[in-house]
Length: 611
Image (tube, rainbow, N blue to C red):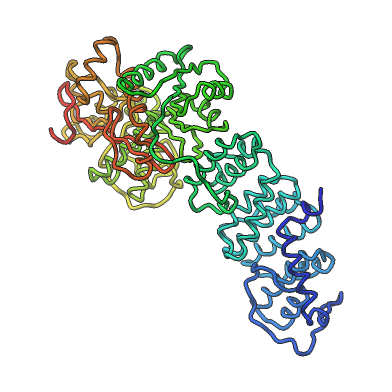
């Protein structure tokens, strides 16, 4: 390991500063420490102590001289600064007894400070594992801002000593906003130096939803700048996209002086590559999407090329797309395929037909999905708009049910400031007991089958009466469960307003199901009375098409139609009415759908609230 790697780049910068001061300050030749303590020199004047984690700007002897003169909190701060300076200068022998004295004298409230200095001493002794172990016992959020900055600097130095530059950079990235402007330049340069040693592949793999947007921005930019395999047009396009996505990122200092040649205006592709599963187990879904895309493409001058993703490696498939001369990609469908595609050195925009967990947030990548979780969030928005104050979420105790309940609750808390009540059901045999338990619950109940998502067990909140229900159930479950809510409450009482998503859709015109009367359902306008002429044409070509096939057809149709409007929507243009709903785009490039709400009435769906 090099000396630079052992000590940390920031330590080198600060040591150089201290060396210059040692050469110019006369006091440094007068103030001498001996093993038994400091010999106070005449003429030394006591000063108010700066913050104990402020940047070091003088030699350790001067800090010790001030500590000898000061009292109380000031003395403690000067002592901490003296120990930090000694450790930074590499004088561990002098620092050790001072740290022992401080450890015994510091009040309980200052023990986190002692822990930080213990970690710094371990680093000075080339023991990064021990330093990280000591830091792991601290809650950085309990420290003041300067203390958190020092904590993160120590973590960065420890990871650098362990030869883990990505982790070291992550700590410095988190530290950046805690620093004063004059310190940020050095911090930014150190991040750059750490990441500049890593391969583009490593930096691409480092990106993920578990990291901050600022960290992912660093990794993404350094992967672009450090990739020798990028063609000039690819590099320019990717830098343009990064530049548009991160307008205030600290790493912008490393962008080329001029970014030109690639317009970030509306997309007007001449050749669209469509990546879909056209064979294998998902061929039916892929062909429904293909049919919608082809229908929307009628009369357009652009060229469409379809590529079957079944069993294909995304890297080789992307090369094939490039060789075909495409300038826009629509698809793919599977989340893992999207992750693999966005990991390539893209040189064209993408509208993916799903939403993976990690969104790079780049300006030319968009995501369109028919997500059940997004429909749950839409239900939360609608219920809030309708004036409800305390909803009950009743969801199946499976992965999908829990995801929908969590997303509903996230959206509800964002709007209302308090959690929904969340209850889960398992099977038909236990429905009555599950309903009773749910209706008798309150947000302050302890952990169990019923518990607010994200709310600590036993949290005391003002009790609110349940005034509405969101059911994350399918059509069969909804029909079975609704009568139990009426029975358990009181069959003579008015039903609680109940909301469901497209999973509970039942076709209109069938025999009336009285148990569904008054139910509010959200679904795409296409399945009700939207675009009747197009629907007649589609049903004449595919008379056996069911609701699932029609939804995918509409998704493909909207995806192609929306391409020219993606950038304006991302910039805040008015939402666009479409088959799948009223469409808008988030800053991360996610297409959001505002669904149509309908109410069930004696076998038909009518506009909600008009009964």
